[in-house]
Image (cartoon, rainbow, N blue to C red; front, side):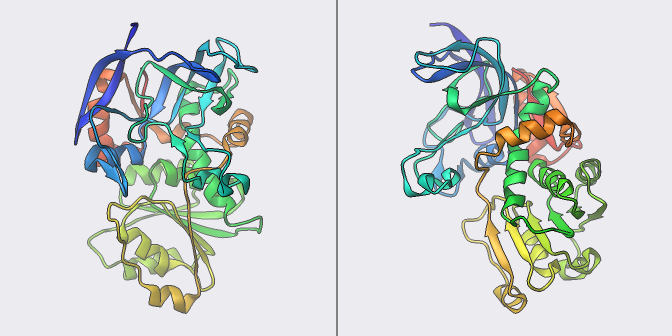
Length: 344
């Protein structure tokens, strides 16, 4: 057995660096030397609560992490189109390919999807990762591993914006400016929308501005949301990326009549109260967003062409030994953190 180091969730709010075996790639898999991996809000849900809805960590230790980039270190039998040394980003979702949703081109809502770092599956906060070669995408030398690790949240942002259709979006608001929120800002800006970014953390608003927001508004959680909604105007579309009852309430209050809301944020509660009277009177369309759906190659092209810049969202980095500290920072939204990366 060849050992490697991995930052593992050993219990609620507990991260420890352990030695585990280097995985051996199976047929159709590649072994990736992980160079950078981001801490996602869903990782923080497992860290804080041990669950996301019905997805529960049943046994510890559990390896988290689903935003990796690295180099191909070895190839399993039957792999074609990749070579050892290739620089790659990783698509963390592997749908079954056979169900009705997969056949309809909606593999992101496949009921049998395997997702990197979900309970019972290995995650990427480690030195080496074995994953299906078909789920790896080459990145050019001009794209750093840190940028490539930000591609997964950006792909979610691009997917969310795609759900609005091909129509011209003139005005938009993003409520909640964590990594996915600022990714939505970048995706909307690329679509030439005038974007207002909202959050209560000043550091996040500064990053949102650098990612393309034309206007930023700091939300004060001590003041009634209804009073603060007036400052946002009445955008055509709103993306809720905060994952709180308050952020969803603000989205419903601020959007113009006949508008569309896309909900990305993962709520802590299983049941979220919604003022359906306001939503009904405005005849709103409320969309739910589930991860991304095959947008990774297009996102790589956008990043390589420098038509988008994901570097501003990466605010903190550290090695595996820094994982516990970075998780605490990200969970507390403290220290100016937006996106924290672990560099194994």
